[in-house]
Image (cartoon, rainbow, N blue to C red; front, side):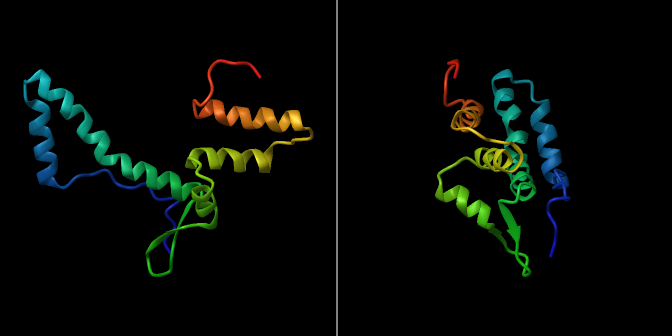
Length: 123
């Protein structure tokens, strides 16, 4: 079974795509350049996401090479959480000592702050 956790997906484009992107970058039209500026990030965005999901254990690879959601990944989906939120919750449950209800609320509030779901209110 291939271990994607240690793999960094390659962002090398084939020669004709590279030539096309270089051509687009060199076009002098300023209005067109704002569209060009978003082409490469959108092209590699999916690879960064895959790396993150494998690294954090939300995706696994089957023996036949197919990719599927892990039990942890399925739980995140069922709870309607963002992957980052689920990873943060797991980290806090495994690594942060929570002894009181107040500490539990504080840790949950930190996750909401990280998701920008709360304003600058103090707990």
